[in-house]
Image (cartoon, rainbow, N blue to C red; front, side, top):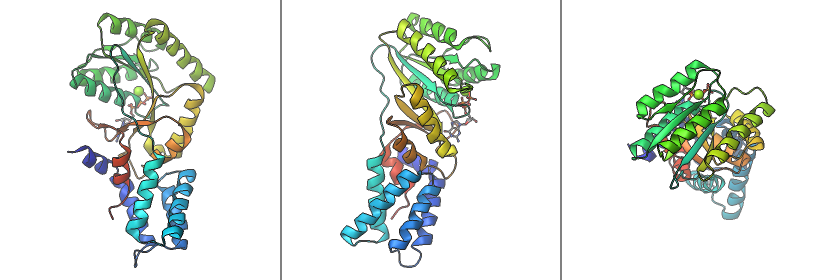
Length: 302
Ligand SMILES: Nc1nc2c(ncn2[C@@H]2O[C@H](COP(=O)(O)OP(=O)(O)OP(=O)(O)O)[C@@H](O)[C@H]2O)c(=O)[nH]1
Ligand SMILES: [Mg+2]
């Protein structure tokens, strides 16, 4: 299956939602008028594009219609696609020479552990030396879950007992990564941090240890968001951006329901690029987030 087909399949629910909305508002003639623009805005909001992005997109269509006088469905779709593409910032993960550290952050249940496993598999399959560290020590089950992914991907997992200090796990994982000369160390962290200060302190501590132990490493903090949670994901992105640098956003569960438009709301709310899309629960259901393919998959065909 091509990457485009994967995106299309993953975003099927959102696309059919948007398409049925389009068909409803432009039922007979396939022609848009001013009144339909309000409906268009509602469809975009319901697909979780967020108020800001939905308003922006609707305004773009409105001014284009005034300017060109072209209000046919295929043209409106073109304008929407172009405008969405301009709004979205994507980025490709690249490993640097030497040690790379990916720190997976995000609230609980978003998909951090699953994405860690998928990433381990991706880079291991590409011939890289990969290792994971179970810095989510909150529950024994979380550690076991990462070990299972380690086995699936064929990469070692550095872990302590449940309840151990996550920073100690990070320290050990970094020592092993140096000793074994790995290319990529993926650190899975806990989402259950009770408040902002707690979260900030924990991440600061982990970042300090990484900075001290592997000062030359290429470190990426990846914020994992659950696309099915819509506007909550946007709030999480804003909250994390306040306490820690974010190098890239992972949109997990884009296949989950009809809320794929959240990608637009997330980019409107943060300056970090969206780098990865989670498109299912299997080990290979992870793709580079490609804004062109995303837009093509989100909007109905003309
Ligand atoms: N459909 C779908 N499900 C996903 C995807 N990514 C993760 N999941 C599912 O989401 C659930 C939570 O994923 P985890 O990886 O355990 O999330 P987490 O952030 O590590 O959660 P905590 O460790 O509890 O904080 C699991 O049931 C995963 O199978 C995805 O891209 N698509
Ligand atoms: Mg986890």
